Amino acid sequence: MKAVTRFAPSPTGYIHIGNVRSAIYPYLLARQTEGKMILRIEDTDRERFVEGATDLIEDTLKWLGLDWDEGPIIGGPNGPYFQSERKDIYLAWAKKLVNSGRAYADPTPKEQIDAYREECNQKKIPFLYRNFRPENPPEWKPGIPLRFKAEPKDYDWHDEVMGDLHAGPEALDDIIIIKKDGFPTYNFAHIVDDSEMGVTHVMRGVEYLSSTPNYLALYEAFNLKRPYFVSLPHILGPSGNKKLGKRDGAKSVTEYREDGILPEAMLNYLACLGWNDGSEKEIYTKAELIKNFSLDRIQKSGARYDETKLLWLNGEWIRKIFVEEGVDELFKKTTDFWPAAAKTANEKYQKKVLSIIYDRLKTLSDLKTMTDYFFRDPEVNVDLIVNNKFLKKLSEADLENMLKVTVKELSVLENWNADSLQEVFNRLLEETGKKPAELFSLIRLAVSFAPFSPALNLTLETLGQKTTLSRLNAVARAI
Image 1 (cartoon, one colour):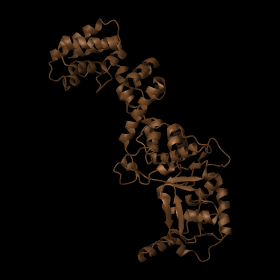
Image 2 (cartoon, helix red, strand yellow; image 1 turned 180 degrees about the vertical axis):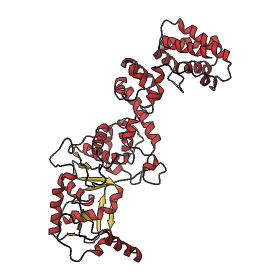
Image 3 (cartoon, one colour; image 1 turned 60 degrees about the vertical axis):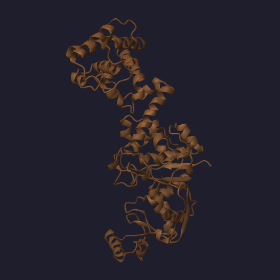
Image 4 (cartoon, one colour; image 1 turned 90 degrees about the vertical axis):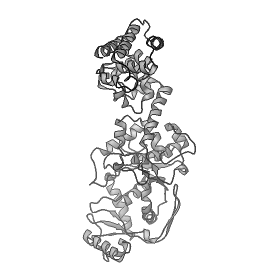
Protein backbone atom coordinates (compact mmCIF):
# COMPACT_ATOMS: atom_id res chain seq x y z
CA MET A 1 0.00 0.00 0.00
CA LYS A 2 1.03 3.60 -0.46
CA ALA A 3 1.74 4.79 3.05
CA VAL A 4 0.67 8.23 4.21
CA THR A 5 2.89 9.23 7.11
CA ARG A 6 3.38 12.40 9.09
CA PHE A 7 5.99 14.21 11.10
CA ALA A 8 4.25 16.41 13.65
CA PRO A 9 6.73 18.28 15.85
CA SER A 10 5.93 20.94 18.42
CA PRO A 11 7.71 24.31 17.93
CA THR A 12 8.92 24.51 21.51
CA GLY A 13 12.66 25.03 21.00
CA TYR A 14 15.58 23.46 19.22
CA ILE A 15 15.12 20.24 17.27
CA HIS A 16 17.15 17.42 18.79
CA ILE A 17 18.22 14.10 17.34
CA GLY A 18 15.25 12.23 18.81
CA ASN A 19 12.88 14.59 16.98
CA VAL A 20 14.76 14.09 13.74
CA ARG A 21 14.70 10.31 13.88
CA SER A 22 10.92 10.57 14.30
CA ALA A 23 10.93 12.29 10.91
CA ILE A 24 13.34 9.92 9.16
CA TYR A 25 11.36 6.69 9.52
CA PRO A 26 8.05 8.18 8.28
CA TYR A 27 9.97 9.71 5.37
CA LEU A 28 11.63 6.42 4.41
CA LEU A 29 8.36 4.48 4.52
CA ALA A 30 6.52 7.10 2.48
CA ARG A 31 9.22 7.18 -0.20
CA GLN A 32 9.61 3.39 -0.29
CA THR A 33 5.89 2.85 -0.89
CA GLU A 34 5.57 5.85 -3.23
CA GLY A 35 3.16 7.37 -0.75
CA LYS A 36 3.50 10.77 0.89
CA MET A 37 4.73 12.40 4.07
CA ILE A 38 2.90 15.26 5.74
CA LEU A 39 4.57 17.91 7.88
CA ARG A 40 2.20 19.16 10.57
CA ILE A 41 3.12 21.70 13.23
CA GLU A 42 1.49 20.88 16.56
CA ASP A 43 1.50 24.35 18.10
CA THR A 44 -1.53 24.26 20.39
CA ASP A 45 0.59 24.47 23.55
CA ARG A 46 0.85 28.25 23.41
CA GLU A 47 2.71 28.54 26.70
CA ARG A 48 5.67 26.57 25.35
CA PHE A 49 5.59 28.04 21.84
CA VAL A 50 8.97 29.44 20.74
CA GLU A 51 9.13 32.05 18.00
CA GLY A 52 11.25 30.87 15.07
CA ALA A 53 11.13 27.20 16.07
CA THR A 54 9.00 26.28 13.05
CA ASP A 55 11.55 27.82 10.68
CA LEU A 56 14.25 25.79 12.41
CA ILE A 57 12.26 22.58 11.96
CA GLU A 58 11.72 23.24 8.27
CA ASP A 59 15.36 24.22 7.72
CA THR A 60 16.61 21.07 9.45
CA LEU A 61 14.41 18.81 7.34
CA LYS A 62 15.58 20.54 4.17
CA TRP A 63 19.23 20.21 5.25
CA LEU A 64 18.76 16.46 5.73
CA GLY A 65 16.98 16.10 2.40
CA LEU A 66 13.68 15.06 4.00
CA ASP A 67 11.24 16.76 1.68
CA TRP A 68 7.56 16.64 2.57
CA ASP A 69 4.56 16.35 0.24
CA GLU A 70 2.05 18.39 2.23
CA GLY A 71 2.57 20.97 4.91
CA PRO A 72 3.81 24.50 5.56
CA ILE A 73 5.42 26.30 2.63
CA ILE A 74 4.14 23.90 -0.04
CA GLY A 75 0.52 23.61 1.16
CA GLY A 76 -1.74 20.76 0.14
CA PRO A 77 -5.39 19.61 0.09
CA ASN A 78 -5.63 18.92 3.83
CA GLY A 79 -4.51 22.23 5.31
CA PRO A 80 -4.12 24.22 7.39
CA TYR A 81 -0.98 22.46 8.62
CA PHE A 82 -0.60 24.47 11.81
CA GLN A 83 -2.87 23.10 14.53
CA SER A 84 -3.44 26.62 15.87
CA GLU A 85 -5.21 27.37 12.58
CA ARG A 86 -7.46 24.29 12.79
CA LYS A 87 -9.39 25.33 15.89
CA ASP A 88 -12.80 25.30 14.21
CA ILE A 89 -12.16 21.77 12.93
CA TYR A 90 -11.46 20.49 16.44
CA LEU A 91 -14.50 22.22 17.90
CA ALA A 92 -16.73 20.66 15.25
CA TRP A 93 -15.39 17.18 16.05
CA ALA A 94 -15.72 17.85 19.79
CA LYS A 95 -19.40 18.78 19.35
CA LYS A 96 -19.97 15.37 17.79
CA LEU A 97 -18.86 13.78 21.04
CA VAL A 98 -20.97 16.16 23.10
CA ASN A 99 -24.04 15.38 20.99
CA SER A 100 -23.49 11.63 21.30
CA GLY A 101 -23.04 11.86 25.06
CA ARG A 102 -19.35 10.95 24.93
CA ALA A 103 -17.97 14.29 26.17
CA TYR A 104 -18.90 16.66 28.96
CA ALA A 105 -17.98 20.12 30.21
CA ASP A 106 -15.90 20.01 33.35
CA PRO A 107 -15.61 23.25 35.36
CA THR A 108 -14.02 21.47 38.35
CA PRO A 109 -11.22 23.70 39.70
CA LYS A 110 -7.66 22.39 39.79
CA GLU A 111 -7.61 22.48 43.59
CA GLN A 112 -10.54 20.06 43.74
CA ILE A 113 -8.91 17.72 41.23
CA ASP A 114 -5.72 17.78 43.32
CA ALA A 115 -7.83 16.88 46.36
CA TYR A 116 -9.31 13.89 44.48
CA ARG A 117 -5.81 12.76 43.57
CA GLU A 118 -4.61 13.07 47.17
CA GLU A 119 -7.64 11.10 48.35
CA CYS A 120 -6.61 8.25 46.06
CA ASN A 121 -3.03 8.46 47.28
CA GLN A 122 -4.20 8.14 50.84
CA LYS A 123 -6.27 5.09 49.94
CA LYS A 124 -3.36 3.74 47.87
CA ILE A 125 -5.51 3.28 44.80
CA PRO A 126 -4.91 4.59 41.23
CA PHE A 127 -6.34 8.02 40.52
CA LEU A 128 -8.90 7.85 37.72
CA TYR A 129 -10.86 11.00 37.06
CA ARG A 130 -13.79 9.02 35.69
CA ASN A 131 -14.54 8.03 39.28
CA PHE A 132 -15.09 11.70 40.14
CA ARG A 133 -17.16 12.91 37.21
CA PRO A 134 -19.40 15.89 38.04
CA GLU A 135 -22.98 14.70 38.44
CA ASN A 136 -24.61 17.59 36.60
CA PRO A 137 -22.08 19.11 34.22
CA PRO A 138 -23.04 22.46 32.66
CA GLU A 139 -23.60 22.99 28.99
CA TRP A 140 -20.26 23.12 27.26
CA LYS A 141 -19.08 26.48 25.93
CA PRO A 142 -15.66 28.05 25.24
CA GLY A 143 -13.75 28.70 28.44
CA ILE A 144 -14.75 25.40 30.06
CA PRO A 145 -12.55 22.32 29.62
CA LEU A 146 -14.17 19.46 27.73
CA ARG A 147 -13.53 15.87 28.79
CA PHE A 148 -14.02 12.65 26.87
CA LYS A 149 -16.35 10.27 28.67
CA ALA A 150 -14.57 6.92 28.79
CA GLU A 151 -16.36 3.59 28.72
CA PRO A 152 -13.90 1.25 30.47
CA LYS A 153 -13.25 -2.03 28.66
CA ASP A 154 -10.46 -4.25 27.41
CA TYR A 155 -8.53 -3.21 24.31
CA ASP A 156 -6.30 -5.30 22.08
CA TRP A 157 -4.19 -3.86 19.31
CA HIS A 158 -1.17 -4.57 17.18
CA ASP A 159 1.94 -2.42 17.06
CA GLU A 160 4.25 -2.91 14.07
CA VAL A 161 7.28 -2.83 16.38
CA MET A 162 6.03 -4.04 19.75
CA GLY A 163 3.69 -6.74 18.47
CA ASP A 164 0.29 -7.67 19.92
CA LEU A 165 -0.64 -5.60 22.97
CA HIS A 166 -3.46 -5.56 25.52
CA ALA A 167 -4.80 -3.11 28.10
CA GLY A 168 -7.55 -3.52 30.65
CA PRO A 169 -10.25 -1.09 31.81
CA GLU A 170 -7.86 0.50 34.29
CA ALA A 171 -6.01 2.14 31.38
CA LEU A 172 -9.05 4.20 30.34
CA ASP A 173 -9.87 7.58 31.82
CA ASP A 174 -11.81 10.77 31.13
CA ILE A 175 -9.08 12.75 29.39
CA ILE A 176 -9.36 16.45 28.56
CA ILE A 177 -9.81 16.96 24.83
CA ILE A 178 -10.43 20.73 24.70
CA LYS A 179 -8.56 22.95 27.15
CA LYS A 180 -9.87 26.04 28.92
CA ASP A 181 -8.18 28.26 26.30
CA GLY A 182 -10.20 26.58 23.55
CA PHE A 183 -7.25 24.69 22.06
CA PRO A 184 -7.29 20.89 21.81
CA THR A 185 -4.93 18.60 23.68
CA TYR A 186 -2.52 16.39 21.76
CA ASN A 187 -4.58 13.35 22.77
CA PHE A 188 -7.52 14.68 20.77
CA ALA A 189 -6.04 16.84 18.03
CA HIS A 190 -3.73 14.25 16.51
CA ILE A 191 -6.60 11.80 16.05
CA VAL A 192 -8.71 14.41 14.28
CA ASP A 193 -5.80 15.54 12.10
CA ASP A 194 -4.61 12.05 11.19
CA SER A 195 -8.15 11.10 10.19
CA GLU A 196 -8.75 14.20 8.07
CA MET A 197 -5.34 13.96 6.43
CA GLY A 198 -5.64 10.25 5.63
CA VAL A 199 -2.61 9.15 7.67
CA THR A 200 -2.16 5.38 7.43
CA HIS A 201 0.87 4.91 9.70
CA VAL A 202 1.26 6.73 13.01
CA MET A 203 4.92 6.69 14.01
CA ARG A 204 5.89 8.14 17.38
CA GLY A 205 7.95 7.44 20.47
CA VAL A 206 7.33 4.39 22.62
CA GLU A 207 6.35 6.69 25.50
CA TYR A 208 2.89 7.04 23.92
CA LEU A 209 2.09 3.34 24.33
CA SER A 210 0.46 3.86 27.73
CA SER A 211 -1.94 6.40 26.20
CA THR A 212 -2.92 4.22 23.27
CA PRO A 213 -6.01 2.72 24.96
CA ASN A 214 -7.47 6.22 25.31
CA TYR A 215 -6.72 6.85 21.65
CA LEU A 216 -8.43 3.59 20.70
CA ALA A 217 -11.48 4.69 22.66
CA LEU A 218 -11.61 7.91 20.68
CA TYR A 219 -11.25 6.07 17.36
CA GLU A 220 -14.12 3.88 18.43
CA ALA A 221 -16.29 6.80 19.57
CA PHE A 222 -15.88 8.40 16.14
CA ASN A 223 -16.25 5.06 14.33
CA LEU A 224 -12.82 5.57 12.73
CA LYS A 225 -10.57 2.89 11.27
CA ARG A 226 -7.41 2.47 13.28
CA PRO A 227 -4.17 3.40 11.55
CA TYR A 228 -1.06 1.24 11.75
CA PHE A 229 0.78 1.99 14.99
CA VAL A 230 4.58 2.14 14.91
CA SER A 231 6.23 2.76 18.29
CA LEU A 232 9.83 3.94 18.00
CA PRO A 233 12.30 2.92 20.73
CA HIS A 234 14.01 5.55 22.84
CA ILE A 235 17.42 6.90 21.96
CA LEU A 236 19.40 6.21 25.11
CA GLY A 237 22.24 8.17 26.65
CA PRO A 238 25.85 6.97 26.35
CA SER A 239 25.46 4.87 29.51
CA GLY A 240 22.62 2.96 27.86
CA ASN A 241 20.35 3.02 30.92
CA LYS A 242 18.21 6.11 30.38
CA LYS A 243 16.67 8.24 27.66
CA LEU A 244 19.11 10.65 26.03
CA GLY A 245 18.83 14.18 27.41
CA LYS A 246 20.68 17.49 27.48
CA ARG A 247 22.59 16.43 30.58
CA ASP A 248 24.13 13.61 28.57
CA GLY A 249 25.70 16.09 26.19
CA ALA A 250 23.05 15.76 23.52
CA LYS A 251 23.18 18.72 21.20
CA SER A 252 20.66 20.14 18.81
CA VAL A 253 20.89 19.13 15.18
CA THR A 254 21.80 22.75 14.42
CA GLU A 255 24.85 22.48 16.68
CA TYR A 256 26.00 19.32 14.93
CA ARG A 257 25.52 21.06 11.61
CA GLU A 258 27.59 24.04 12.77
CA ASP A 259 30.25 21.65 14.04
CA GLY A 260 30.74 20.28 10.54
CA ILE A 261 28.64 17.12 10.54
CA LEU A 262 27.45 16.32 7.02
CA PRO A 263 23.71 15.85 6.44
CA GLU A 264 24.45 12.53 4.72
CA ALA A 265 26.25 11.29 7.84
CA MET A 266 23.57 12.52 10.25
CA LEU A 267 20.80 10.90 8.19
CA ASN A 268 22.79 7.67 7.93
CA TYR A 269 23.56 7.58 11.66
CA LEU A 270 20.08 8.36 12.95
CA ALA A 271 18.37 5.97 10.54
CA CYS A 272 20.53 3.15 11.88
CA LEU A 273 19.99 4.17 15.50
CA GLY A 274 17.26 1.65 16.23
CA TRP A 275 17.05 -0.01 12.82
CA ASN A 276 19.19 -2.50 10.94
CA ASP A 277 18.56 -4.35 7.71
CA GLY A 278 20.19 -7.53 9.02
CA SER A 279 23.55 -6.95 7.34
CA GLU A 280 26.94 -5.69 8.56
CA LYS A 281 26.66 -2.67 6.31
CA GLU A 282 27.17 0.72 8.00
CA ILE A 283 27.35 3.30 5.22
CA TYR A 284 23.98 4.01 3.58
CA THR A 285 23.00 6.64 1.06
CA LYS A 286 19.50 8.04 1.27
CA ALA A 287 18.50 5.94 -1.75
CA GLU A 288 19.81 2.79 -0.06
CA LEU A 289 17.94 3.60 3.14
CA ILE A 290 14.71 4.04 1.20
CA LYS A 291 15.23 0.73 -0.60
CA ASN A 292 16.21 -1.32 2.47
CA PHE A 293 13.98 0.17 5.16
CA SER A 294 11.32 -2.06 6.70
CA LEU A 295 9.16 -1.70 9.80
CA ASP A 296 9.89 -5.23 11.00
CA ARG A 297 13.59 -4.38 11.34
CA ILE A 298 13.00 -1.56 13.82
CA GLN A 299 14.29 -2.82 17.16
CA LYS A 300 12.10 -2.95 20.26
CA SER A 301 14.78 -1.96 22.74
CA GLY A 302 16.35 1.48 23.06
CA ALA A 303 19.34 2.42 20.93
CA ARG A 304 22.43 3.83 22.65
CA TYR A 305 23.65 7.15 21.35
CA ASP A 306 27.37 7.12 20.53
CA GLU A 307 28.89 10.39 19.36
CA THR A 308 32.19 8.65 18.61
CA LYS A 309 30.35 6.49 16.07
CA LEU A 310 28.77 9.59 14.54
CA LEU A 311 32.17 11.25 14.15
CA TRP A 312 33.61 8.09 12.58
CA LEU A 313 30.69 7.89 10.18
CA ASN A 314 31.10 11.57 9.29
CA GLY A 315 34.76 11.00 8.43
CA GLU A 316 33.76 8.08 6.24
CA TRP A 317 31.23 10.25 4.43
CA ILE A 318 33.81 13.00 3.85
CA ARG A 319 36.07 10.45 2.19
CA LYS A 320 33.20 8.84 0.30
CA ILE A 321 32.12 12.15 -1.24
CA PHE A 322 35.69 13.02 -2.22
CA VAL A 323 36.42 9.64 -3.79
CA GLU A 324 33.08 9.12 -5.53
CA GLU A 325 32.04 12.67 -6.40
CA GLY A 326 35.32 14.58 -6.46
CA VAL A 327 36.90 17.52 -4.69
CA ASP A 328 34.46 20.01 -6.24
CA GLU A 329 31.44 18.38 -4.56
CA LEU A 330 33.16 18.16 -1.19
CA PHE A 331 34.38 21.73 -1.50
CA LYS A 332 30.80 22.98 -1.89
CA LYS A 333 30.10 21.72 1.62
CA THR A 334 33.09 23.43 3.24
CA THR A 335 32.15 27.08 2.68
CA ASP A 336 31.62 27.99 6.33
CA PHE A 337 34.45 25.95 7.81
CA TRP A 338 37.74 27.37 6.55
CA PRO A 339 40.02 29.44 8.83
CA ALA A 340 39.73 33.21 8.52
CA ALA A 341 43.05 33.45 6.67
CA ALA A 342 41.65 31.28 3.87
CA LYS A 343 39.36 34.11 2.76
CA THR A 344 42.22 35.71 0.85
CA ALA A 345 43.13 32.50 -0.98
CA ASN A 346 41.73 31.56 -4.35
CA GLU A 347 39.38 28.64 -4.79
CA LYS A 348 41.90 26.55 -6.72
CA TYR A 349 44.38 26.71 -3.84
CA GLN A 350 41.69 25.86 -1.26
CA LYS A 351 40.71 22.80 -3.28
CA LYS A 352 44.36 21.75 -3.45
CA VAL A 353 44.58 21.97 0.35
CA LEU A 354 41.31 20.06 0.73
CA SER A 355 42.53 17.31 -1.59
CA ILE A 356 45.50 16.49 0.65
CA ILE A 357 43.78 16.96 4.04
CA TYR A 358 40.31 15.45 3.47
CA ASP A 359 41.22 11.94 4.64
CA ARG A 360 42.22 13.27 8.08
CA LEU A 361 38.98 15.16 8.73
CA LYS A 362 36.40 13.88 11.20
CA THR A 363 34.23 16.97 10.78
CA LEU A 364 34.39 19.88 8.38
CA SER A 365 35.15 22.21 11.29
CA ASP A 366 38.52 20.44 11.59
CA LEU A 367 39.53 22.52 8.57
CA LYS A 368 39.91 25.54 10.85
CA THR A 369 42.63 23.96 12.95
CA MET A 370 44.18 21.61 10.41
CA THR A 371 44.71 24.01 7.52
CA ASP A 372 45.45 27.42 9.03
CA TYR A 373 49.19 27.15 8.29
CA PHE A 374 48.45 26.74 4.59
CA PHE A 375 47.09 30.29 4.49
CA ARG A 376 49.33 32.22 6.87
CA ASP A 377 52.78 31.83 8.41
CA PRO A 378 52.54 30.12 11.78
CA GLU A 379 54.16 31.68 14.82
CA VAL A 380 57.65 30.24 15.35
CA ASN A 381 57.72 28.14 18.51
CA VAL A 382 61.18 26.71 19.16
CA ASP A 383 60.00 24.98 22.33
CA LEU A 384 57.66 22.84 20.27
CA ILE A 385 60.65 21.63 18.28
CA VAL A 386 63.18 21.04 21.06
CA ASN A 387 60.59 19.23 23.17
CA ASN A 388 59.37 17.00 20.38
CA LYS A 389 59.76 13.33 21.30
CA PHE A 390 61.82 12.64 18.16
CA LEU A 391 63.97 15.76 18.39
CA LYS A 392 64.59 16.45 22.07
CA LYS A 393 67.76 14.32 22.14
CA LEU A 394 69.34 16.38 19.35
CA SER A 395 71.44 19.46 20.06
CA GLU A 396 70.49 22.89 18.78
CA ALA A 397 73.53 22.74 16.52
CA ASP A 398 72.22 19.48 15.04
CA LEU A 399 68.80 20.98 14.45
CA GLU A 400 70.22 24.12 12.84
CA ASN A 401 72.50 22.07 10.59
CA MET A 402 69.62 19.83 9.49
CA LEU A 403 67.56 22.87 8.56
CA LYS A 404 70.39 24.52 6.63
CA VAL A 405 71.13 21.36 4.67
CA THR A 406 67.44 21.02 3.87
CA VAL A 407 67.21 24.65 2.69
CA LYS A 408 70.26 24.14 0.49
CA GLU A 409 68.81 21.10 -1.22
CA LEU A 410 65.34 22.56 -1.66
CA SER A 411 66.65 25.88 -2.95
CA VAL A 412 68.04 24.29 -6.11
CA LEU A 413 65.06 22.02 -6.77
CA GLU A 414 63.74 22.91 -10.21
CA ASN A 415 60.62 20.73 -10.39
CA TRP A 416 58.67 21.51 -7.23
CA ASN A 417 56.31 18.55 -7.06
CA ALA A 418 55.59 15.70 -4.68
CA ASP A 419 57.77 13.13 -6.46
CA SER A 420 60.81 15.40 -6.70
CA LEU A 421 60.41 16.46 -3.09
CA GLN A 422 60.36 12.83 -1.98
CA GLU A 423 63.62 12.23 -3.85
CA VAL A 424 65.17 15.17 -2.01
CA PHE A 425 64.01 13.79 1.34
CA ASN A 426 65.62 10.44 0.54
CA ARG A 427 68.94 12.15 -0.27
CA LEU A 428 68.74 14.23 2.90
CA LEU A 429 68.37 11.09 5.01
CA GLU A 430 71.65 9.79 3.58
CA GLU A 431 73.43 13.14 3.80
CA THR A 432 72.42 13.91 7.42
CA GLY A 433 72.49 10.35 8.70
CA LYS A 434 69.26 11.04 10.59
CA LYS A 435 66.25 8.82 11.06
CA PRO A 436 63.09 9.62 9.04
CA ALA A 437 61.18 10.42 12.25
CA GLU A 438 63.84 13.01 13.18
CA LEU A 439 64.31 14.73 9.83
CA PHE A 440 60.69 14.69 8.74
CA SER A 441 59.40 15.81 12.16
CA LEU A 442 61.74 18.80 12.09
CA ILE A 443 60.72 19.86 8.57
CA ARG A 444 57.04 19.33 9.29
CA LEU A 445 57.12 21.38 12.48
CA ALA A 446 59.19 24.12 10.89
CA VAL A 447 56.70 24.70 8.10
CA SER A 448 53.45 24.13 10.04
CA PHE A 449 53.90 24.10 13.83
CA ALA A 450 50.83 21.87 13.76
CA PRO A 451 50.25 18.62 15.71
CA PHE A 452 50.11 16.72 12.43
CA SER A 453 49.89 17.35 8.71
CA PRO A 454 49.34 15.44 5.47
CA ALA A 455 52.23 13.60 3.80
CA LEU A 456 55.26 15.89 3.97
CA ASN A 457 55.93 15.96 0.23
CA LEU A 458 52.30 16.89 -0.46
CA THR A 459 52.36 19.57 2.24
CA LEU A 460 55.48 21.22 0.79
CA GLU A 461 54.22 20.89 -2.77
CA THR A 462 51.05 22.75 -1.77
CA LEU A 463 52.84 25.44 0.26
CA GLY A 464 55.18 26.15 -2.64
CA GLN A 465 58.94 26.65 -2.77
CA LYS A 466 59.06 30.28 -1.69
CA THR A 467 56.89 29.82 1.41
CA THR A 468 58.63 26.59 2.40
CA LEU A 469 62.12 28.08 2.24
CA SER A 470 61.02 31.23 4.06
CA ARG A 471 59.64 29.24 6.98
CA LEU A 472 62.63 26.91 7.20
CA ASN A 473 65.03 29.84 7.25
CA ALA A 474 62.96 31.60 9.93
CA VAL A 475 63.18 28.59 12.22
CA ALA A 476 66.91 28.10 11.54
CA ARG A 477 67.53 31.68 12.65
CA ALA A 478 65.42 31.24 15.77
CA ILE A 479 67.18 28.11 17.05
